[in-house]
Length: 338
Image (cartoon, rainbow, N blue to C red; front, side, top):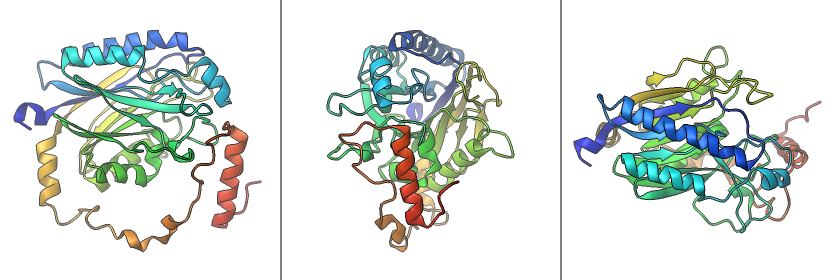
């Protein structure tokens, strides 16, 4: 890695689109995100080069239907697809890396499942496909790869690129420390959050979970965080409004840049210095949490909570999700909700 590739701008790009009802409505959203890539790369060219661009969850399509069957029939697309091909051409044109918004993905290998999938695309093409491991249950009925018996792809892929080692997790994944810790263990230096994180858990007190979690995951993994959030208004993505607040955080949890909270399209940029990150990781003895991790101390990880392989041949529904949540709560000794 040389100076030209070790220090650059990352751009967190948030959007405010109407929620698609059919897959034919995805193209105009892709059109606009392609325009935003051009804006970011060209607009900030007098400063540091923009080399990494991140878009929020659900900017192509959101799970607006209550069953996986309806999502498959009306919104799901294969990955790769015509849209990822357009991003690949744009990545090659500008020599940049694009973490796409999520697609609702269909895969003939898993005919009962719909995945919530984002891709990292660079000048060399698609580098990984990440399928959300922790859907926001009970409402999200797209499948977790964890829930499919025989699924053998890497759950937490990391791409080694000229601008650093990049890994991604989606929205609710970030409420769990484990996905980001596993990405870091797999080599990630830049942790990307592709998110549609709604009010009231946004970027402003007293419920500023968005900001707190992004900063915590950065410092506990000694990693940069580039987090793009939906800035959609209530009329576009009912029944929720989306607070935006897209941000970039350094490896000590410092906010380097953040969009003002509130709906609307916004692009924020901040510098990434991968050489400095690598120096910090190699030099530190204190606050080196992964090296200090006493993994054997936690017997809870030897038991299942939300069981693996449950939805291999069964179509997921909100009601089935609720049943499994109640089952796990009983094992934990929690009283069922009224």
